[in-house]
Amino acid sequence: MVQRIFKAVAVAASFGLLAASISLSTPVHAHVAPAPCDFVTGGGFVFKDNGERINYGVHGGCKNGEFWGHVNFVDHENQFHFNSTRITGYVWDPAMPNSRDICGWGRINTQEQEVMFRFRVVDNGEPGRSGPDQAGIMIDNWFTSGERFYRATLRDISGGNLQLHKGNKSNTLEPGFFSLQEWQMCGDMPTP
Image (cartoon, rainbow, N blue to C red; front, side):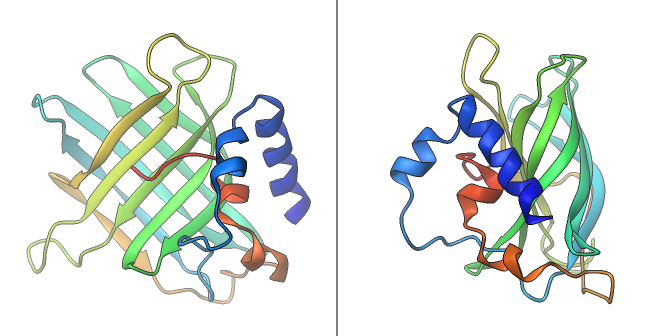
């Protein structure tokens, strides 16, 4: 299972995606796999600064010894549809205890090439009872023209709900996963 993660990292490195993170990484990484592991589910929509709508559906975490999940994301303004194909990391930042990042690979629209992504969710409690949940995504756009990253910055959700769930017996990770560094799970993808 750990080999699958390292294989994904090796593929990314062969495309030059990890060069910046390997040379710029520091020995201490703020984002780590949560122990014990949990999982997140949710869906809804946010509005961009220009008022255009983005819809998303997300679930991810740890299950039966490895990372699992799925991310579906649609930016209606420019017909940008991202659909994950594999999950390579699930991390949290101790400074933001209600946040989780799901990292992995997926496809933009119907293009064959896979690209890396990082989706951040923040569960701030139940709707109407506490602050709004937040969502944001970074997608590596390395094979197309224009800017390298597609970014939907972390923002308050306008509709829907994100739920951080406590772990159960199926939410386990192999011991080696807890020692993975952030760049091994998320490449050089910055946080949204």
